[in-house]
Length: 522
Image (cartoon, rainbow, N blue to C red; front, side, top):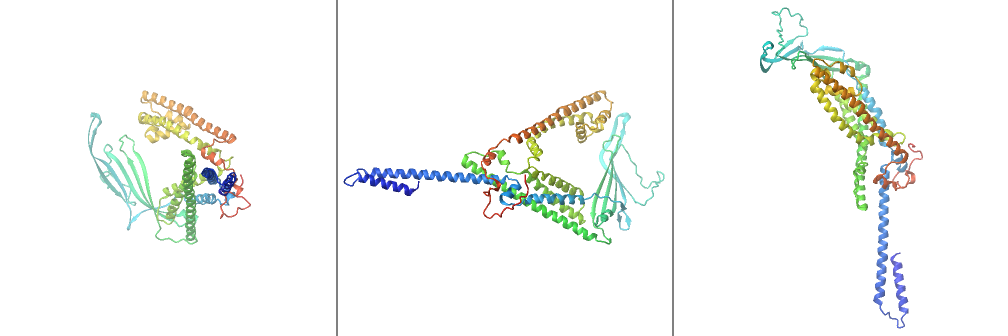
């Protein structure tokens, strides 16, 4: 009822009452006018209330459409607004390119060596021994006299020097090892090499400088000297070399390919960052809408649905790929030799790129069972692993403290952890039992109780409970797929939107027309 209708009814009402009086005057005109004014206010209030309710419903429908479109898969978005799945295309392209790029990063195998020359002479090998300044030990009397100050004595040997050292008086090195004072002996020499195997791969050869250090460690004074080898490598461009062919051109092609990988990852990075930002903006908009219209706060679980973990994984993968590609280009330009760092970055990024494709398989019900099971079981698995880790660490420290002096696999905390983890998987059990020294019957008996209890507890109890936890989650997800998943407040709110992707109600005015052939079908 509009204002014109109300005014007409009031006017007719006045005329009717005026005709009821012979003298043409109303007995109480103020009452009649007041009644008409009240009727106008009542109808005006009803009109405003109806208008407010319509606006609220319109806002709710718009919010539902925004949320419904946000949680659509790429195919549904293509059918809805004709939006091309650019992120899917870039991920497929990245899989091919990053995998090819990682395969190009080969391990270095050098076969042509020579001693480094300093001027006209070859560099000498350095032998240094570190020992206590003074040390007199008399085990027969249980006495000793040691000066803890450490001294260093070094000798130099030329590569072409004769190995014959003659008698003790003729010995030019005059190297005497006093083992009760000896701490370490270090042998260091420098080599140069050219990696010629790169020629078969149409690349320029690399020149390397190796600094090799061999260390004999006697710090434990246990009668067993630990030997270790360290090899520091530096790569540089060869001074003079000539190779006929198109190797230089192929090297430039490799650099161009790496640059194209970086550009592709930058495009993927920007697309994923934009999607994450849009998700956070929509989360804030939905939270404000929910608080304004329903006077309720959005739960944490509903808020986390706006944060796509797959996009975060892809962002990390893109950052690692870009960094690794830059290092790879520097290695190809002979500016760096960080093969280890480069291989770790590219290897990890390759793994994450392949994992990121699982997101698109998860849009199909027949393929997303693994993803849903891992996602649902993750909180319980983390809590279970935290409790199991306390028992595991307890056994690690106990084995290290008690069995360390009697068993090689319990010498250090790191080795103990590796040994126990192997026992959990059923590896090397007999050797672990058999290598236990029987010098002390008490320790030997303790080792049996220790190993039997650990194996029984973790294989028969912990692993069984862990498998049961995953199996229970798997059965729950299968039940949900058959009978429907529990609805959260967010999903319940979105489900009231019955508009199909092909209905045209999601389309903006400036959207391009949708192609007749969809990108894919479920």
